[in-house]
Amino acid sequence: MKKKLLALLLGLTLCLSLAACGGKTETVTLSVAASPTPHAEILEQCVPILAEQGIELVVNQYDDYVVPNTAVEDGDEDANYFQHLPYLDEFNESRGTHLVSVAPVHIEPMGIYAGRVESLEDLPDGAVIGVPNDPTNEGRALLLLESQGLITLKDSSNLSSTPNDIAENPKNLQFEEIEAQTLPSSRPDLDLAVINSNYALGAGLNPTTDALAIESSDSPYVNVLVVKEGNENNEAVQALVEVLHSDTIRDFISEKYDGAVVPAF
Image (cartoon, rainbow, N blue to C red):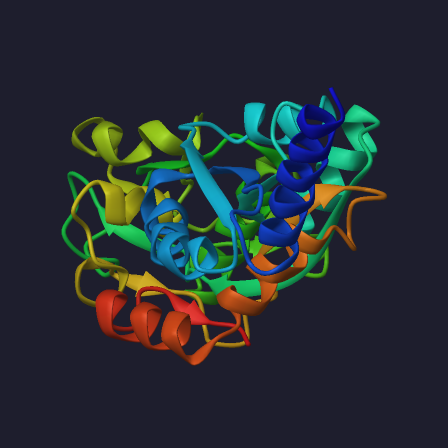
C-alpha cells in the first residue's frame, strides 16, 4: 500500500514539474467581431503572431454595423473592430451601451462613386445621391459632398447632419438614405453614391483610383478596436493591440490597400 501511495505521489510531482518547466499551457481564446474588408483581413494577419503567445484569435465576420456592438455588450464577443469613434459615441448614446475604444488602427477615406453619372461636373439638376442611413456616416457623407461644393450645411461641425440640415442645395439634389452595405450594389439606380471604404473595397472598388472624390487625410474617422467597459486591460486584448500597432501590420495595411486604408498609429 505504501509503495502504491509513493508511486502516486512521485507521478503527481512529475506532472507538476513538467507544467512548471514549460509543459503545455492552456490556450486563451479571444473572439473579435469584424467587417469582412479590411478589418477581418487585417485581424487574420494577427492570428499566427498571437498563436505564438498562446492566444487563439477567432475572427467572426459581420455585414452590418449593429450586431458587432450588441454582441460585445452582451458578452458574445470579446471585442470588435469595424467602426470609427463618432459612430461608437453615437451608438453608446442612443443604445445605452458601455463600449470603449482601446486602440486606433486605421482610417478608411469615404468616397463619392459614379452611378448613372460619370463625373461631378456632369451632375444634373435634381440628381439622386445615395448616402448611408446611419447617423454619423450620413453626416460624414454630407460633409464630403459639401467639401466638393455640391451643398452647404447649416453647421459644418455637426457630424450628425442629415439632409434636413442643408442650407444651400443649388442643384436641388435628392438624397436616398440607404443601408451602408447595400450602397455599392445600389449604384445603377443612383446618380452618385457616397460609400464607406470597407464596403467599397468589398465590392472591388478602390477609393484612391475609382472614387470621384475622397476625404482628406485629416479625417477624424479613425477605425478603432472596441471592448466593453471594464475589459480594457484584459491581457489578450492588450496583446492584440500590441500586434495591431506593430510594423508587420503597418506594412501589411500600406502594401495591400495602397492608400485606400491608412494606418493611424
